[in-house]
Image (cartoon, rainbow, N blue to C red):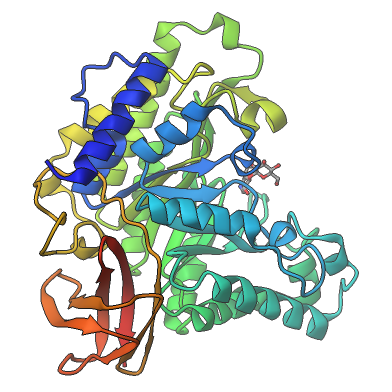
Length: 463
Ligand code: 9MR
């Protein structure tokens, strides 16, 4: 048994003890392990309380055992990262990125251009197009640049469509739209791509799960994605937030239809903020049948997610009903996978069942398999076929310039490059400082740098 397996099993056993989980699943089967076998990401936000060390110990233990993707509830937003003009605050986001690296998790960055959670100083420039363009560009250059290679995917634009029956851009109460016009969206994608060419770039919104009808929000977004793709705007994904209620029974199939429409455009669809709430105040009256119904709806989303090849991430907007924006800000409650005592609800079991009902051999993934289990040799790497969590601590960074790979922070590194099917195409030992990646065709690859027990894996583009 590898050391990673041991660590994960201990971690999960701790979770079992802490939560009293008595589920029928094997001890080393978690949402995360099943998603990873299927080359998919399952995530939950880190609630703001986590960032301030103000959350129960079970939270983190469950979070890193059950999920392989992570998003900050508020801490990477504009008001958090640039509270004063050109003064950036990265501490909280850095804390999350370190946590993700230590636990082998994918980071979603949320969110760059959004009309909400914009600091007051930006609003002082209302209506000043040139100034707002430079403010937005500087923000995107700085924030995306700061986490280049560490944030796998950004919500570049969030919630830019209005709530009208006849959907269009949100033209009021948006400092960006009112000051710049719709070109703020196109520009944001271009700037984000320039700041990190390897990052996936998403348009993210709510109510997309209401379906593709004439003039609906989802149809409007598909039209815009088509236009962006035709014009070379570097969008790679759409996020459907999917904050729904227990009565919204048709929404999973609407998400399926949206995934299919986006597949035509070669764009991934991610579920980015799922929660399925009951009416506020109903908690005391809810019984087994209600929670079973909630589980059934969660399961349908997971079924759709696993059956549509262009879906990659299934992210839930919270972990436990003890900490959820639904109770604080919405007329809803009890929408997550764990109850207030951190006990898994039927919703947890039903998405486990869905994962197990979709064998890994039948689930397609938009991501290269090397992202999940890059081939490896040597001590402590891949010696157990059922290792659960690759726990590696990255002490260093790697940057590509042309064909030169520069490595900082490693004494003597082993460098391996794999193509997007996971086949080795280059290998060098004892690398100090930099190495020329000779003999590889131009394109997208995965590079793995190892020094002792530390390891870094990232995507690179050879031009
Ligand atoms: O969960 C977030 C909550 O703590 C904040 O107060 C709120 C402020 O806008 O934002 C919540 O997160 C939102 C996300 O950033 C975008 N989609 C809707 C989410 C729930 O409101």
